Image 1 (cartoon, rainbow, N blue to C red):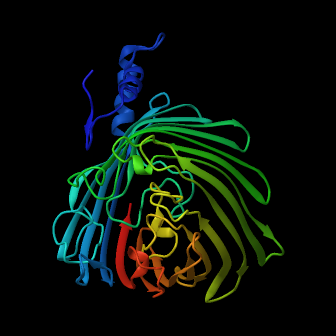
Image 2 (spheres, helix red, strand yellow):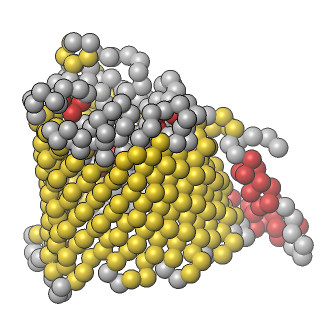
Length: 439
């Protein structure tokens, strides 16, 4: 069987297996009607299109080889074009292309390790690739199987703590994987995935492992949604990367979150989560660290120009020992959504992170939304301050398909004697303006 080629080579034999089963004649089917139904499924699908333009400016005080970085500016465009087939006896397919390019302004380092190293980093490399390409099978509504390149997550965007698309960047992260989502009982969702390759945001032209993780990883996620005010989740992320053993790890965790209505207008919000992570590669440093998340807040419905407000306090800890490669890391997560939008903690420092933060969200009239967040960031090991960050965002949606927005991140590093290594030790200011459409 001919292999299907994508960015990193041949897809899994499971893709060919599903395709072979889909095209296999079935007993009792007349040949012509089968061909007609297959053709109808292939041609009667749904095209999809998205376009996002973004301007980003980065002032980063970190020094490289003793030299300060120049201010970076980028005007980039991300375009996707996809097609989803119709259903053919439970079988389907999806193919999506992604293109990223600079538009007029390209004074930035794209994070791929090549070119423009004198500028601060804006991790949006140019390129064209297959973003998704998979076959699916739904023998019944409670079972969904997929094989191929796909977006694979377990929580609503953008809060993909352990596994996500890194959707804020222009080149999204995807997985070459076989996944199965099953609903064995009402309100119980069991999800399993085997990932053999991770397509990272730095593009196929970057050197390994920036371009991709060669993976032999297993993911298990179980959710129970049958309680009225509490959603329960258990998970295991067993990550094994041949070309990046530093990030090979086993993570086991539990989470509970919910909303309790006090009245027609008031509700309280709460979350508690615990996870434990330890090393999973023989040639890496031994470590064993914990993750904690506690959140409490409220939401209030309002009339007229402010439709609703939400405010919450959060405490999040990613444990660290202070030793090299000794911290709780979520390398496959959409980490831009955590510890501040300045991305100072994309990879957890060796001393870990304790983040005390408050978040406010206001849903406004005219389909506008305002977000404000303030972070007080500290180490886990050594008890020293990293710094503080203020994040602001304003967006407007209109005509169902369009969004415009602006946001900014202001990271103020603590000049203390212990905070001396890596991005957390330097100030940063980042400003974004964007517009997008999706059909």
